[in-house]
Image 1 (spheres, rainbow, N blue to C red):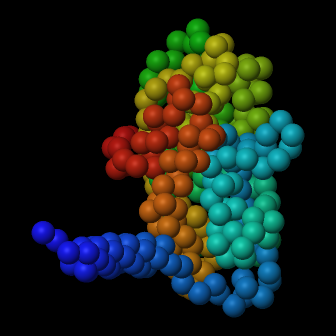
Image 2: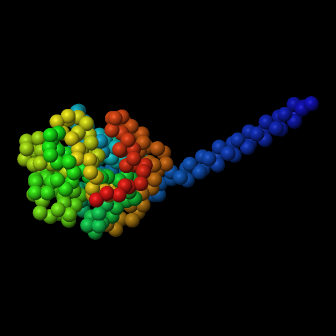
Image 3: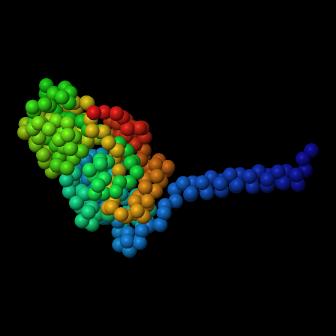
Amino acid sequence: MITNCHASRRLSAISILALSFFAAGLASSQAQTQLPPLPEAIKAAGVLKVGVRCDQPPYGFKDETGKFAGVETEMALQIGTWAFGSPDKVELTCVTAENRIPQLAGKKVDLLIATLGVTPERARVVDFSKPYRWGGSDMLVPKDSPIKKLDDVAGKTVIMLKGSTQAKWFEDNMPKLESLRLNTASDALQSLKQGRGDAYTHDAATLIVVAAKDPSLRLVGEAFAVSDAAAGVRKNEPEWLAYVDAAFDRMKAEGLYAKWVEKWVPADIRPFYTDAFQKPKPTAR
């Protein structure tokens, strides 16, 4: 027979053991998500200035009310919340493929989370964070277009954005291609629909959204120019780069990427975006 005293001792031991496991788990979690000190220059400013895309759903765009939206916008707001305790301390600026690096270099923004692919050319002028996803490229064409694969655009006019990964890829791989280079995705899409070009090339992530909404267009479906996507900071800011890297690690550890993909990406096209954050980068041309 177990006495009340013995039972009490056993319960106490179990409680102590449970508390020990809880404390250990809590300490491990805190260690995993702890961020380094915020750099003094950022702290003194009292606000975080981030360049994001405003024309590339689901990563960065403006919704029907004109508010900033998208997965990368959420990332920017989250860093500001961890840094200053509120997303209201984040000042978002729309950037384009062409002006985003000049905006960073000119100190108009402190950070780029703007569909920025990692390339050797860009690495000479900015420092990249750890990659947080990969991004591939594709082409959008009219539904009845004879273009079925990448090589079919030889001798045709391809619409692309100035300063984009796709523009550089075509320069290197199809230098004789006719190109129409524009500033924004909305201008490029309008030009395609007006027949000013035979195809529109851009990040596959953006084109998938467009094709899903417009039955008059289709994707070619041959991936190329696949690269890692990362945040960009100015050269020689190691403390700030370390903070951004740690913030991205924390986002992954806390499952925030999956949460934001679910929030901003329709279920029928969500697998592509989930893979981009969770699976290794695929090989492509």
